[in-house]
Length: 130
Image 1 (cartoon, rainbow, N blue to C red):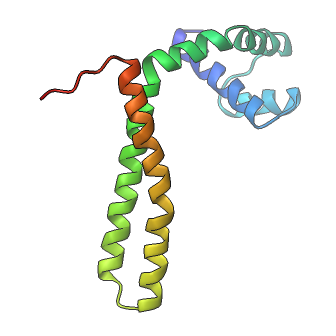
Image 2: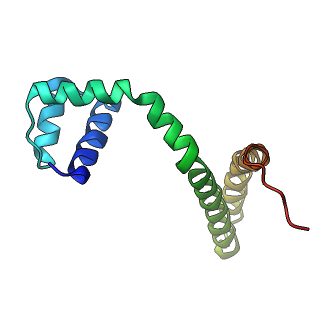
């Protein structure tokens, strides 16, 4: 089994754990994905996932957190942009109000991301250019 296959199986076992699948359901899920492993191997991998969870968390914090954070901001900005497009295209006043309410509901999420961005920038010692 190569590294990509091992990583795929690990991610699928994490998925099984998230979905609270039983051993039988998990093994069946893996088999449907093209990987038939023994219960013993399943439990070894599952134990390894548990044993290395803090390493995984540390890796995510070091390498993936900032990218994910920025992606979420970009997604929210895109959603708002599309809502404004829909607002402009809509002629029904009632529907326009619903769109405006939806835009207003997203604003606190975007604000929280922007506030967190300042904290992240401090954490990574970012110096803005002037």
